[in-house]
Image (cartoon, rainbow, N blue to C red; front, side, top):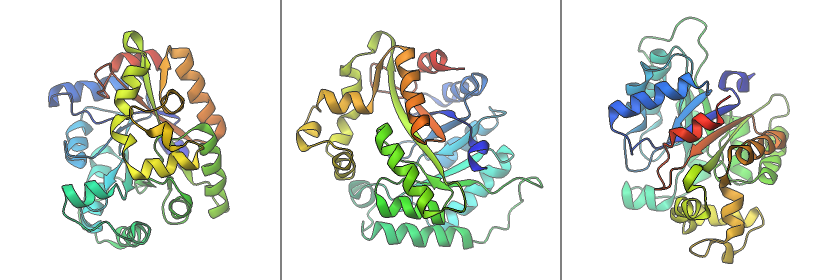
Length: 297
C-alpha cells in the first residue's frame, strides 16, 4: 500500500534558516530520530530539488519529499527528470508533492497567468506521466516516486485520488481530514489514496499563541486559505489580523509534547495516513529540532 512506503510521522520545513552544512546535519538528525519523511517547501528560498539532492547522501532510511513544488515554476518534463534523478539518488526514497500554489506566487513572483488551476493540474499530471526519461533508472524493483497533490477543496481532492497517489492538504482540522478521507475514498473506491497532512507545533519556552500567530500571519491574507477555513467552519473575523484564538488553536498546537501527540492521534484517527510535523521556533522558523526530538518515537 502507498502509505506503507511513506510511514506515519514525518517532519516539514523550509530549512532556509540553516546554512547548508547545518541543513545536512539537520537531515541526518531527523533520519536518526526515526521520522519517516522530511518534506521541504518551495516559495522564494532554496530550490527544493537541488536542496534534496544536497541532503540525499546524508540520510539512509528517511523519505525526502517536496511539499510542495509549484507547477507554474517548471514544466512537467523538467519535474519528471528531477523526480527520477532523486529517486535514483535516494534508492527510491523520494516523494513528489505538487501544487497550483497561489496567484501572487505564480503571477507576481514568476510572471505566469494564474488561471484554470484545476485543469492546469490535470494536464500537468498527465504530461508528467507521459514525459520521456532516458537517464539511469533507479535500482530494479524501485517503485515510481509517490505523487501527491496539494488539495483543499472538492474537485482538487477528487483529482488527487484519481490522477495521483493522494492528497497533501495544509492547515486543516481533524474534521476536515475526515471529510477528505471520505472524499478520496469515494473518488477512487478500488484503492486507498494516500492522505498526508501537516501539523504546526510550538513546544518549549516559546509555546504560546504569539509564536503560533506569527507563523500563521502570512496565510491570513491568502484567499486560498480563507476559502478553505470557511469550509472548515471559520468566518472572516477569524482570519482578520492577527487571527482569532479559535483559528490559531485549531491550526497550530501550542503547549507540551502530550498535547501535540494527542492532536497527531486525532489526525490519524480521522483518516490521515501521514502527519508531517512543522516544528516552529519562537522566531517563526520551521527547524526547531528540539521539538522533533521531544516528539520522536
